[in-house]
Image (tube, rainbow, N blue to C red; front, side):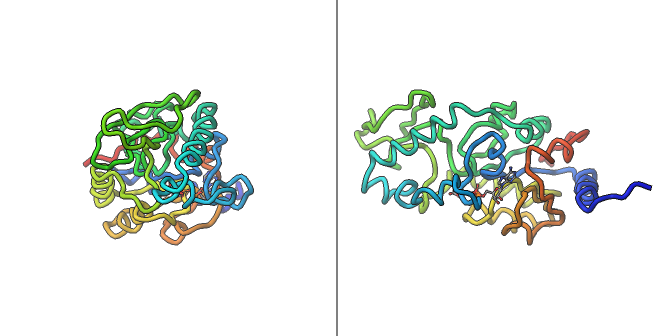
Length: 256
Ligand code: APR
């Protein structure tokens, strides 16, 4: 008789949910990339970005207007960190589920680097690999080299300033991507919530939306948080530790 720990029991319960789920999607945050060495925003550790920097100063239109050079320098510092990291076992485990949609708040492209098809990654908060024109009426966008990111410069199309193509506090999410994510979350059997404090709206509202439409919720996060209350099962492990075991042997999809 082998004693089954509560963690084993929860992993088994989560796998039972997946085995009876036809339509599964993942909703991820900074915790998914933590095991690749990228700092999260709100972890209770000194490296967490918002315990070291002021989010309004560095991730808002007001902060950009007040000191655009400081904002560009900070994002280029982050770009340097992104240039030197690689997908972890969690990204690879998710990439093994080729038919599954990845809704992510992350601006890195580690899921795509792990092999997830770009069209299956919905970046709700944009991408740090691109700059866009700060003038929302201008469509100019540029890929940037994470190793040698450009400095503060004017848009070649309209003359306004270029800035990272990420969604800042107070800015709207990319409309089409947001609509796709919302529609998907109204037709799921299970939502995998991975490495997010679920405190930033409207993105965090996807969890309640999925539940309201009958979806089960599996949370992967070593810490308790706002998502725990909505979880059918909370796996209190790091994503890199538990996702390979959670997804092993499945071929999950998100579609009808
Ligand atoms: N594996 C899984 N989860 C982890 C790990 C790990 N190895 N390490 C930390 N976590 C969890 C933390 O416990 C926390 O619940 O990941 C979560 C990270 O939360 P945040 O730092 O708030 O990041 P996120 O939820 O992505 O923030 C949402 O806030 O600042 C904005 O735009 C930014 O997209 C970001 C949004």
